[in-house]
Amino acid sequence: MNSSFDINKIVRPNVSALKSYSSARDEYQSTGNSMIFLDANENPFPTNVNRYPDPQQRDLKSRLGELKGIDPENILLGNGSDEVLDLIFRAFCEPGMSNVITLPPTYGMYGVLANINNVENREVQLSEDFEPRVEEIFQNVNEQSKIVFLCSPNNPTGNSFSEERVLEIINRFNGLVVIDEAYIDFSQAPSWLERLAEFPNLIITQTLSKAYGMAGIRLGTCYASREIIEILNRIKPPYNINGLTQEKALEAVLDTGRVHGEITRITGQRDYMSSELSKLEFVERVFPSDANFLLVRVDDATKRYKQMLERGIVVRNRTTQPLCGNSLRFTIGTEPENRSLLDELTKITKQENL
Ligand SMILES: *Cc1c(COP(=O)(O)O)cnc(C)c1O
Image (cartoon, rainbow, N blue to C red; front, side, top):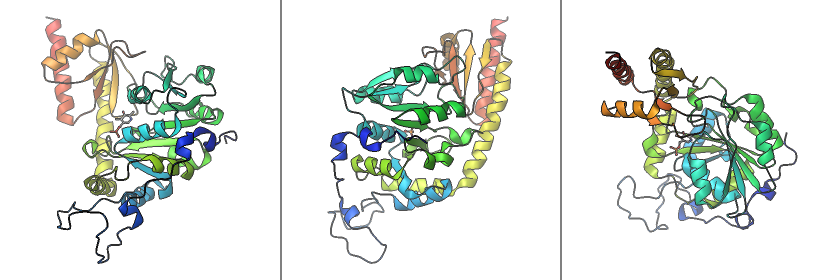
């Protein structure tokens, strides 16, 4: 338990003083009865989307809450987790003053959002085995440090961080710890969601963009204490989750059978691809993965990247990232897509050995 954490010391003073904007749909929530709605200047003729969507996404949060075992009051939804991350910056970081801690190599958006919000990004590189270096993190923390971003399973390395290290960071840090669990559904490690209630400074983000197969609708989820969610609600755009997204997202979270089936296939393919890729001559190392991608160190990443492009296969070249020299990130595709990748890579090897 982090006893020195005080949310009132973390929130920006101007945000603390804000009252949230009250939209028409906040002031009167449709009950489904035959009310006549003349309050929001909508066009009355039905198009299926002629009405403003629910600004608090009650149906969706209630279903998500059931699925995750979390009270809807502990949930905030965003236009992708990228919007959630931006809201967190804007609620808690004072431009030109605050700093955040990020642990490269990791997801690029934390640094991008820090720049956009004029917040210093203190980068503390992961260890050689891609774990957070706890002492180095705390050497970089000062009074102005508001947030530590932990991505677990981490993009692009694919590993989950050690539970003990994450726990120590949450317990020692007097600011907020954001755990980005975009890939948690592919992982054997439990979600930190199970322990959310223990930590007043913990924020967990997840997304429908990866395992749920809905990157196109843009829906990110954020789980935290009621106090934190209440602050984020104050600054979010009233209708940030459009009606079509709410509808599709509800379908996805109800269809757990489809999602689980796909996760099983993807993780099965991941483990198969890991062993097949290891056999290739120019592959030096396939890193273990808890996600739906593999980080692979090769002899010459840029050369291999171009060879694959010429054969119509797009992967991600991560060679310029710290600790990722000559490394490529392969997303796990369908069985035939993965087969094609292996076939092309085998052909490349054979040609070179002629
Ligand atoms: C893909 C990804 C996301 C997802 O972002 P959305 O805006 O929800 O699509 C978040 N965090 C990480 C680490 C990711 O790799």
